[in-house]
Image (cartoon, rainbow, N blue to C red; front, side, top):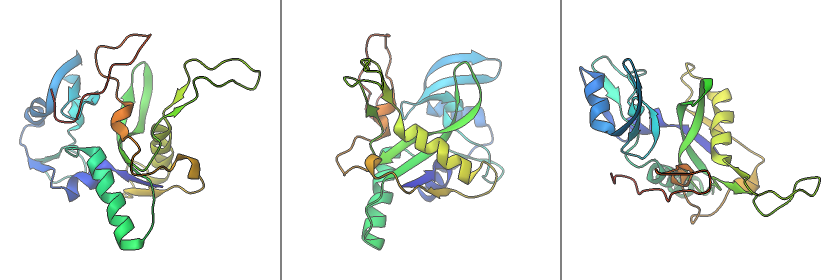
Length: 203
């Protein structure tokens, strides 16, 4: 399993743009504002992700520029997977990661924003726990757990953009696995159901 930070993917895909005003870049990447506190905006961006500042990053990039997220992170993960298969003859899962805050939680963690060849969700509904109790709501965000684990190796300031995870063959799938888009809850949602995710690029 290969975990790749979105920053290095964005740079490779030419998603570095000139921007004297980061706020203008955030405006351009925003589909809707979810919450606002002072200058901080939590928004839904073009990729359908709800996050701070639309994922527009002014760190680890030259002055006067900002980094945008990959246009389609799942497609980015598929290209990396296919490239590794062609160059090295290996079939590995790929997760593209980015840093998120969480509602009502302090601190940041990495999550999956793109994936290929990875079972991003482990649906345990219909099974039972160790005591025989039915599992009716347990769906594990496997790809997010992998992303967070990888960040413990990569770190935020060490300049290491890639981590390798071994020993989890049960989470590596085939080319037909849904990408990280399957992790996104689309509005409106209720406690009783999930809304279908919208395709990348649609508003």
